[in-house]
Length: 392
Image (cartoon, rainbow, N blue to C red; front, side):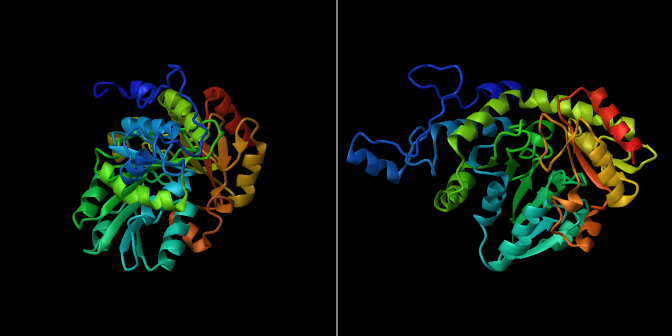
């Protein structure tokens, strides 16, 4: 398996066949497991082997297949699958922190991530310092000897800032901090995070990994020591486990992940190039456009620019809403990474809980619209977007 390319690993890694030698992975819909003897049960509770299970909250054969497959694709030693992306973020951050610890985080984050850092961790005595994720001097000034965790979105939502994973990881490691990266926009395909220095990588599998709007799921990846020694005890006892049917859906999603996101990213680039400079837009934001502030970094680190672009419509919220309401192909929703193209107005949905001052600081204006590009024909999408812009 060590010589397999990513597309091969995404199809075959972690496969566990039953006595029937099925082609498609089996769904083990069970909450518990039977032991041959009382002695076997006792031994399993002392130490669980690689192919041994106790209870679905602790692990399940279908879920384990997904964990092993995504770990092989990411290049991680191990993984733990969770009920949702936010369950994964919460567990990755909380499992190793205690009152009095210090966290440094990029400030450009999804609204629920900000809630965990600003509200939940602060409530339990964890100090959090926010920085401009693209400014390495701010990272250097913020870390301290007691900094336990450095956290950021490698490609921020929804303003698409590109963070230098390698440089920030070096800064975090200089004080012994664990570097946790929310890598959902970059996907396991476009940019490796662990080889660049990330200790822990988190995905909302709800997005590109499922890719068809069917299921909620998340996954945390890292060293076996972190996953089994620090994270697993927290998740086993707090109940954030993934459902086996969800794991099966995500296994099917991994089989086509690289093909899907590659096509979506190519469409996103062509759309961004086609509409940049449109007279109804203040700007178009996409990492592989030369106008992007971190274009050189994005080109150097990311094979493609991702599946999401953001546009700022002239005329604020009223104009943005007219644009959204005039679209015929793109759906108005708050997900991303789907086979269907999805448009979102972050200021009134995903980031609505932030104050006006916070949104202004992050660059989330009333005219900002996030576009997650799907698998429709690229020219059809361009025509749909241009037609909607013409109706503002």
